[in-house]
Amino acid sequence: MIKHLLSMDQLSADQITHVLDTAEQLRSVTDRPIKKLPTLRGRTVCNLFYEASTRTRISFELAAKRLSADVINFSADSKSSVAKGESFKDTAWTLEAMGVDAIIVRHGSSGAPHQLARWVKASVLNAGDGSHEHPTQALLDLFSIRQHFKDFEALKVAIVGDILHSRVARSNVKGLVTMGADVTLVGPPTLIPAQATRWGATISHDLDSVIGDADICYLLRVQKERQNEQLFPSLREYAALWGLDSRRQARMKPDSLVMHPGPMNRGVEISADVSESPRSIILDQVANGLAVRMSLLYLMLGGDRPDSTETVRELTEQLV
Ligand code: CP
Image (cartoon, rainbow, N blue to C red; front, side, top):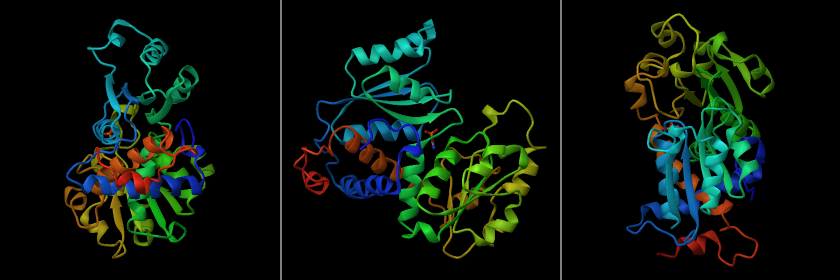
């Protein structure tokens, strides 16, 4: 298995399938009264978050704890020495000196996890870097899709909204295209980057012409915090043209699904009733994030070593 997970570019279809299959086996642990495995006992995992997060930070913390690792949570806020001007590099070396085995990093700058991986000996997992990538989100999304559709090659996925600022879109397109899915990026011309034509996806600006054919409508959050200029006339117009409401959802195929990485702007990219409809798997995505992140920590921190005598199935039969 790879040492660092920085981008979905690193993973072949076989490697993605291995991560998802391992997650499937580890998921059974979460249904037990005692939800812990001894695999990472004695290892230390650090959550290094320079940007806000609820889902990713908590599920990485829980995943590491379920595998018996020690967990350090570091937020670059007023309580850390980042507030006194300590650099990213000095922070990285400080963590390294404390002997961490893995650093989960979220940073507002694209490429920050790549830089970190050059500075430290620990494994680095990208938990979202600027508008670049969010590979663990893509893996949990692929896991969630696979629970409903066994064949990615027959799948039509519409990824809708603010593609320009979305690390989730970039990682998902790479993952879905690698697995053979047919991806259409939908949004206003100002929110689809020019280079998206080279990503292996089709581009559309008309959700109504795409929605009836999609097996999955994957909505993206409008990232108001990353927009320095007015890229569409108003949120009201955005919702009317590119939002998924119950009227538009009624035109989707009967077995189609609605996905969103969260957090949602209800009433903008997705209406409240659609987000809570039977076809929405948004909370399944959150739940599956735990199993997928357990799988990555297990595979990357040594549970899958060639000299390991335990299979993941034998491992899940153990209790702490
Ligand atoms: N989907 C996602 O990355 O959510 P958080 O920002 O809450 O981690």
